[in-house]
Amino acid sequence: MSKINVHLHFDGRCREALQFYGKCLDGKILFSMTWGESPAAKEVPADWGQKIIHATLEFDGHSLSADDAPPGSYAKPQGFNIMLSYDETAMADKIFKALSEKEKS
Image (tube, rainbow, N blue to C red; front, side, top):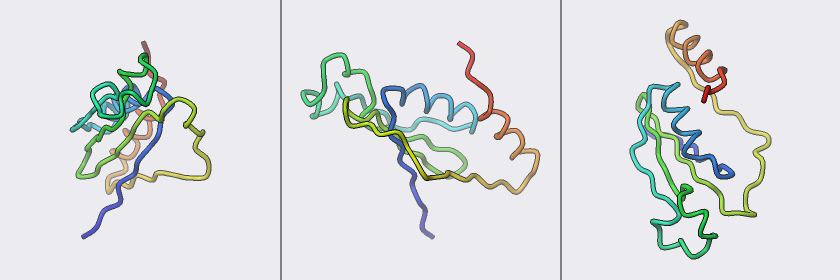
């Protein structure tokens, strides 16, 4: 069996996004490394040290990888979809509702 691993790039909000997706999908961040913790730390400005160079969220046997693209490298995503399929309508409705809601600070 093979799996596809989706990798998303963010403009400095990777941690926030994965925490939100983890909450909605009942997932867990299995790995997270900041730019500052990595050997590539000197490739980004000092204030970028707490941004994510790589993280992996696992949910329901699937994984989603993500990062904060280095300053000047981020491009707004265009032309793709991520589809989640569930056997139970109630679960699909629950996930759809959670992903549709705005996070309250």
